[in-house]
Structure formats: structure tokens, C-alpha cells
Length: 602
Image 1 (spheres, rainbow, N blue to C red):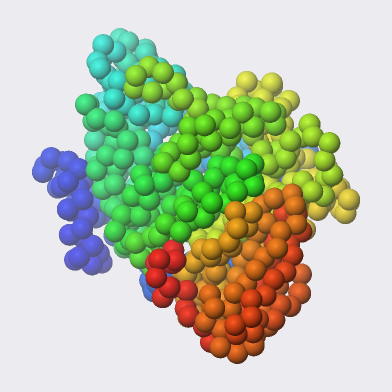
Image 2 (cartoon, rainbow, N blue to C red):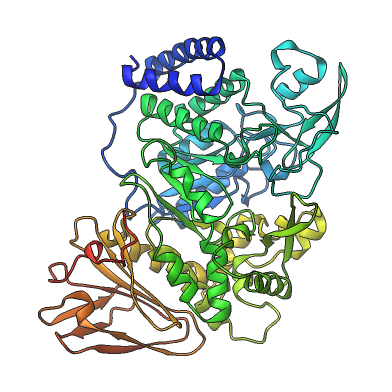
């Protein structure tokens, strides 16, 4: 049975989106679908409070990342991950593994199948039992080869309203989109040439969510994911979902209402499901997808963090990072940030709007190019173009591959940035090319002509395992440093995503913050040197209301620092050094969440 309050919420959402008759008909169909699903898959009890804790660290990978001759890549991936990361990573985001025609999986030709080039549903379902599995709903568009688009082209009345068409003479100059390609694409149909909406590419045809059949069809796709063990749903490019003439067609109220609709669906059939929204936009716009804290996404990508950390390490100055981090907040105890530094895409520039000056953002562009990367551009309403994304491997974004610099220094610089990622409030996501110390794949860009290929190289299993077995290799050094950091994080409740975070005053060369567990029984002071020079770190006991001598223990190196009331203590951090200093569990001091003006907790 569907609870009356949930049923009323669904009806209200549909009434907001569609005319009365359409809304009523859509609800009748939806109710039958949900009741059938519940008969086959009874809903588990809803877990109270947060859906995540300090043990959640999510690996981001393609399904065919690890390959072997004659074996399905998903099987090879599963075995590789079992051997390498099963004991310290809990989450797995497999990027689109469906049949596709372009964009490395994000032009889906069939939502119901696994690409035969990768494997079968059985392998995906097996990994869902081993890891907390995140899967993409590529929601804004489908491949031009999808059956829905084929039906539209031949004049099948069932699909007549599945896509958006427009007169090419229409004024669409207000539309905001992350590409410089034409917005409308001519398509041959049984009715002649129709111009269809293509936000991203000519092979990615936007879906028309103003048609309730589309919403219900995508809801069916989501239910299928849940039936296969998926726990986290990533709504890809969700910001562009709803189109309306005379608007920017981004972040429209209807888009938020669709997310609320799906959140209610999940609350009914799988209440522990987590929604994460992928909206690579300025920070204030991005966090609107938390909704009121209980009706939209539980996780939102922290898109400002990757480029802001690049700026921080380029400049050796944490002041912009400190100022931004002190403002971070979420609207409740069921929401938090998905922190990441690298992904299958590049590093977005728009999330820096309002945080860095134009000249500072331009420096990122120039450094990217100097380090062997490229830059993608977007079209502006006035006809100009602006940098949208830095296409570069994050290791090489931080480390100039052409520089004569000791590899140990480059590894330390890279891992200092990763330490910040892993310590900050939220759930960390680590791209597989970061975890295993990859560098730019310029040859791939030449092969495909696509700038994002620079960070998407696939591996032969024997080759990657040989490198990992060599302690002197870059991959081995990076991977083992990651393991140390992740094991330290997952063993401390101070790193719980709902634990508070207080940005501490520190010199520009250091980024220092205090993490407190939700129950205040664990506290860790996280100190990060973002420069190539040793830095002195000074700890004033007055900042922590220390009333008796205490010993802080570094979770990473095991060193101890004694704090006594009224006697500031100092220690030195090496270039790009990191210290995570754990307070004794019963230390008497102010809870960080009660410190006026310094808390970025909930």
C-alpha cells in the first residue's frame, strides 16, 4: 500500500507539472506501477537520520576500465577491485554501462540492457552486493538511435511528443547550456525535416518531460535500477531537464519538482535510496538541489572544490579556500556534499563564479594549457564563448609534467590535495585515475578528437597490476598513500558527513579545520600545507577550551603533540605535509558546532 501522505505528494507534484486530466491519468498509471513493484520488492524499513557515515568513500570508474583478452570488462573490473580496494572502499560509481552511440556512454541507446561490450546485468548486480552502488540516470537526453527517437522519426504516435522540436527562427538566445554547438539539430522524419533540441550534441536528443509519458518511462527505468541493487542514483545533467520558451531552460521550477517527485517515489519503494544531482554550475545554484533538506537530493556535487584547490596550490594561498569553506552548509541532517577533485569529465570553471576574479580564473586556464591540458568552451547568450571546463588529469593539473621536479614532491603535492578532499565534511568520491596515479593521455585525445579523453584511458589488467606491484612506481606510491588516508578517515567518527566542520584561523600557507563527530566523542584537527616549503603550525589551546594537558595523536604518522592550558604549541609540516591530529575522546573543550561564526556544519 502507498501511504496516503505519499500518494498526496505524488498527486500534487503531477498537478504542478501537467494539466489536470494528464496529471490524473499519470497518477493512475503510476500507482499501478508502484503497487506492482512493492509486491515484488517489499520496501525495507527506512533508516533514520543520515544515509551516509565516515566509512563511505566512493570510487568512480568506467565499466570497461580494466580489460583482459577474452573476458567481459565488468568481470575483470570486479575481480580487480576485489583484490585491490575491497578492504577499504565501500562505494562504487560505475559510469554508464548501457548500449550507447557516443560520449563514452552518455548517449544511451537502451536503458534496459548492459552493453554486450562490457558484460551482463549479473555482473553489475554482483558488484551491488559487494559495494554501495551508484548508477547514472542519463536523464536529459537519449541517443539518436534509441527506440523512442526511432519511433518519433517514423511517425509512431506513441513517441510523437517524446522530443522537443522548435522553429529554427525562434529566439532561443536566453538558453543557458555548456556547449558551443548549435542548440537545434535538423532531423529527417516521416513528416519532413524537424528541428530537435540537442543541449549537448547532435547524437544526444533531449527528452520532453512536459509529456507525462516521458516522466513515467524514466520512472520505470529508475525502478529497474532499484530492483538490481542500486542504492545511489546520479541524476546526470539534471539542471537542463525542463525547457520552456522565453527562459534560460536551466534550474526551472519544474526540474526541481521532478526531483521531488522521484524522491517521493523512492521514499515509498526504497526509502534508503540516495539521490545525487550533477549540476556543474555556480555554487549558489548548485546547492539549490538540496531543496528543503528532505524533498530533493541528499548529495550534491561540490563542484567548486576541484578548481578552488587548483588555485590554492598554484598560489600557495588558502585564503579564498578558507573564506569559501567557512560558508558551506546544508539544510538538514540528511544532506551533505559529494566532495571530489577529479572525474570522467574535466574541472569545471563556472563553479568559481563569485569566488575568484576573472584574472585568477584565467590563470587556471593558462596553467592547464602549460601542463599539457586543454580547455572546453561554452556559448553565451550574447554570442561569445567562455571557458567552461579544464580538460586535464588532476595529477598533471597540480604537477607540470614538463618540469624538472622530484617525483616525491609531485606525489606529496597531489596527496595533500587529496587529504583535504578526504577530511572535509561530506562524502568523498575518488576517480579511479586519481586513486592509481594516472597522468595525461594526450595520445587518446589525438585518437578520438575529444578533449575529455585525456582522463579516460583504459588499462590492461596485467599491466596495471605489474605497476602496482612495483613499490617505486608512481601508481604504487599514490595508491598506497591513498590507502593510508582512507583507512585513517574511515576509522574516525569525526569524519562523519554530519559531523561539524570549523575552519580555523591559520596563515595563508596552511588550510586548517576541526572536525567533530555528531556525538562529539571524536575530534580531529586537520592541517594541510599547500606550499613547497616547510611551514610552522601553531596550535593555541585557547581555541579549543583546553583546561588540562592533552596529547594529540597524528592519525597518519603517529607523532604526538602535547597541549597545555595557556601554552601555545608549534610543530613543523614538511612541504605539502598533512597532519590529522586526534584529540583524546574525553577532552574538555568547546564543541565546534557551538562556536559562533566558525561552524560549517548543519
